[in-house]
Every structure is written in structure tokens, then in C-alpha cells.
Image (tube, rainbow, N blue to C red; front, side, top):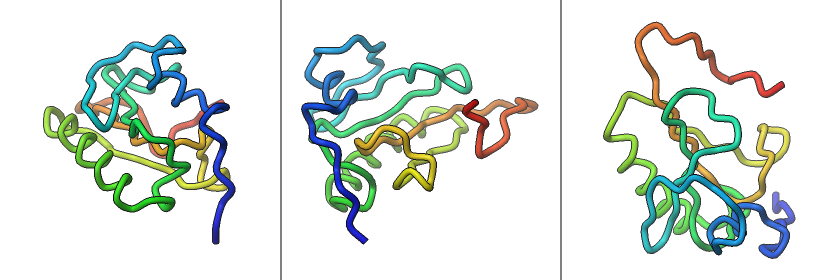
Length: 117
């Protein structure tokens, strides 16, 4: 199953990577960027995105693995969930590969999947 990717020029995450859209950047690498999402579900929640436009985790395994390595570097600092989605049916809303790194704390009330209402 091949999903039609969103062109990079229409992609809000590409605009963040290019520095054309505002975002709270928390870490940058040569191949990826981590920033705070618009509606973080826990304190410290960040998105890790590759600098190249890839629609989702299934589009380019090499880019997906590189971005996951960067998410894992951040995940090593805390107990967390690391989550990605592929396609609208799987709750993907921005069609640029991204990994959520969601810190968890004992007794937090976040249940997964989280409610995005």
C-alpha cells in the first residue's frame, strides 16, 4: 500500500526544519530536529522529525531508523513512550515522519492512546 505523501512545500514540519515557522526547538542534529508540539500531553513531550521530508515511518526505512535513533537518544533520559503513526486511520495528522517522545511519571493520568479532542 503506497500512501501519497504531502509535498514538502505544504508541510508544517518542513517549515519548522527550514526555520520558516515558529517552534520551541529542544535539540538539533545534522539529520533531525526535536521540538515541543503545539499541544504536549505531558511536560517534556517532544516530536523528533527528520530534516528530509518523509511522509511516515513506512516510506523510507533508512530515514525512519535514523530519526528513531535520535528519538532513542532523548528517550534514554527519562521513562517515556515513543510513538509514531502511519496514516490517518492510525491517527497521523501531519504527514511528515515524526516520533513522539512522551515522558511518563509515576501516577500520571495519561492513558494511551491519548484523547486528541
